[in-house]
Image 1 (tube, rainbow, N blue to C red):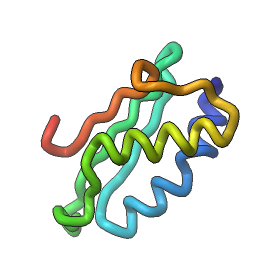
Image 2 (cartoon, rainbow, N blue to C red):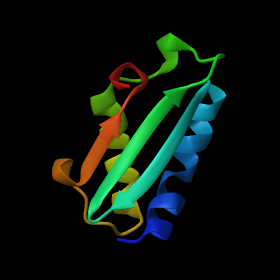
Image 3 (cartoon, rainbow, N blue to C red):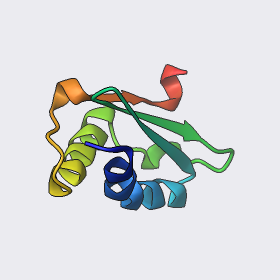
Amino acid sequence: MSAELVEAALGPMKTMLIADGYLLDARLNDRVVEISVSATPDACAECLVPKEMLAAMAADMLTRQGADVDASTLSITYPADH
């Protein structure tokens, strides 16, 4: 898995979250994809899906790009976690 693959796979998710007032930062750290979601002042609190759902969506997007992903290779941080 490469940083470029992560960026390409999660690009649509970034776009989706921006529409609801959230920013997504995804980084590849060793073999773990670290996904951080932060809220903008215009964030829609009711629009953010549960963390488990976002993880499943991210894993699916990454898998479709050829990445070997499971729960141990994803780390997700939400605004409430900061």
